[in-house]
Image (tube, rainbow, N blue to C red; front, top):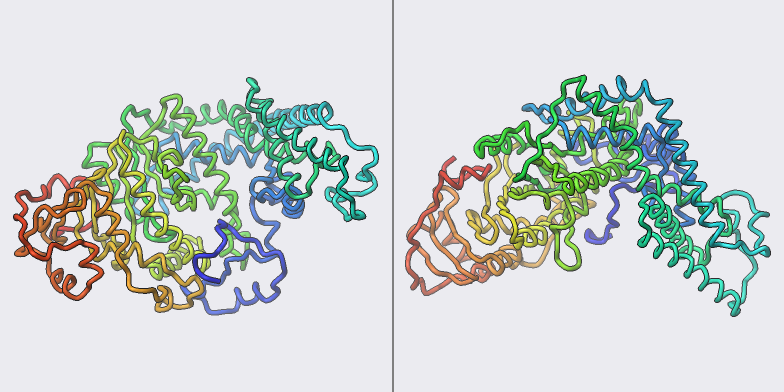
Length: 612
């Protein structure tokens, strides 16, 4: 399989047994390139995937698989969690988004503090009320199921000639039948099914009651799925209602859980003396982007220092790093020899909770009740730009008035090594091919994300590209930085890493085999910067001295006397590099008149440059 063709799943589930996988995991010698797990969950662990574990959910893994075959929807979309598990989601996102969580010097400290706060609220305040809460939520589900059946009874009439009742089980009505000619009556029935789905959709959009709107929308989504898979709706109303109930509980049910949990959460916050994050009228958002295990969390101490330089108390930031939730979702030690799969077993649920966090933040923004935020998460869609080129409308960064974007550029093979070291410390492991594929996703997405944000006109966007190809523990090097459409480039050759690091062999078994052989690069990202930035200042990484300036892609000034060491050789020996810079060979331009204000620029950057 070519590196760019891999399916974009957060988690992949193996449908056929591999009897030797567990044995190999236990017996082989493990290291960064053979970490003791594969990117496919072994079949014997499927029932431990946390979205379908019997202690968390009404629907098992097998039951949900059947629903997937019937509807074509994803496993995560068809999960059916019980009240307590949904309440845990609510506690995780509310502690993350609304409370000041103590942060310390080590990677693990923030997670330990966050999970400790959630555990206190869960065990000491939620558990004593759980019986009454379960009863209330069961009543909510029962009312919803009754309403869904009522909608179906009023709008769908089962064909008495259907033989569904003779077939047992969820998928009984899908058992093969004799070939049916496409008569005018069957075509009419198909159109009738389409009309019903459209009626539900229209009614959902026009319904003023959000509860009923959500029920109609859930039925429409299930109907579209079944129609797409089977070509006709199921005559089994109870089946249709059960499936729609799952979607309804994921959507509107989340709000009901929030309503039930809210007084308990507020009581716990007051009793424990937790600090509520203050609302900010002018919000600062720091967003760190990079591949999985690229070192995003390791720059958090530098971001903390940046906040101090900006005069913003670190305790006023919501520290949004969903990976810290994992250890509250599963007992790593309880997995025995399979403990390395813990992160994969929580992957789908983590994504579900993360989406709930986005929804909560959007609701808080509407109420004008938002804190400063630090965002550190790897999510495939966090690197995606919509078809119309907009990124701003998608994720949490849009809520900032002043945005700081940090792009962590780490060699793909280093992410494998760093992930292994992280696993030894925190027990969070990832398969090698997953890690390498994340690099492809990240470095493909970075340019589009960057240019979409620098084009935003209604807020200040400061950005910094950090070369993390340094020994673990050392400060990353600043490659480039800027504000909106004004950019300063300190290391133009290093900009090419964003192009090169997307050409990855995900099947590599050693560091030397990771980067694929590619044709000569044309410095595509550097070219894009030159084309799209209104102004570029070229400066020496070691000293900060300005040696050139561009406006709207054209050179305005150059100073050959202060060219950085080695740049002359790069220009002379790399024609593609020279072409990318559109280098003015005649050198007939004036010298730069201004220099970088190092004090001011270092106030807003966190990497190492200019004799640091």
